[in-house]
Image 1 (tube, rainbow, N blue to C red):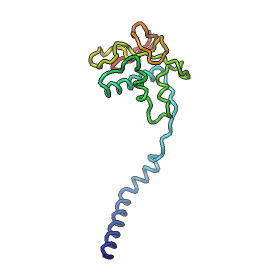
Image 2: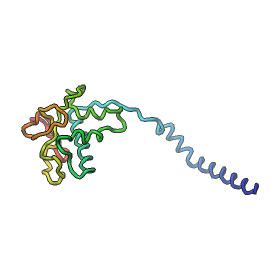
Image 3: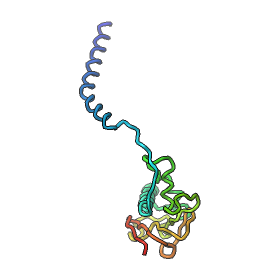
Image 4: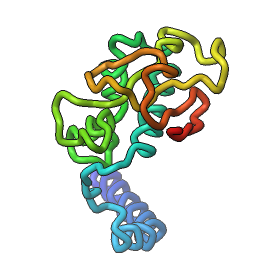
Length: 165
């Protein structure tokens, strides 16, 4: 019985040594390159174009998950959790909902969703439909007609930016 345990321990040590020999240099290299370091969290600072692109991405993630765009009356509420990325300090993703001039405001946002996209499947709409736009209304979950409510840049369903005229 003692002989069996000695063999088992001996074989285990040989296997551990072999694994260490094979994997050790790569693990040491990964350690030296910072692979195991914690990622430093950063603050978000984006302009209107950055915000619109990120809002578009969040809307498309929502669409892919739910099979349609959100209801316009709660579109910011619906996509807010899709704006926080792992490299940002906690709650920095919420800044993407605010136009840069309202970055420090808790109640002014400045973006609106086009009512034409409300609860629709993306392929049921023309690709050039403006999905989110800079709006006259600065309230949360603002929505309306992109033609009458737009004050600046917009982004289409396909992700094309339409600059202010």
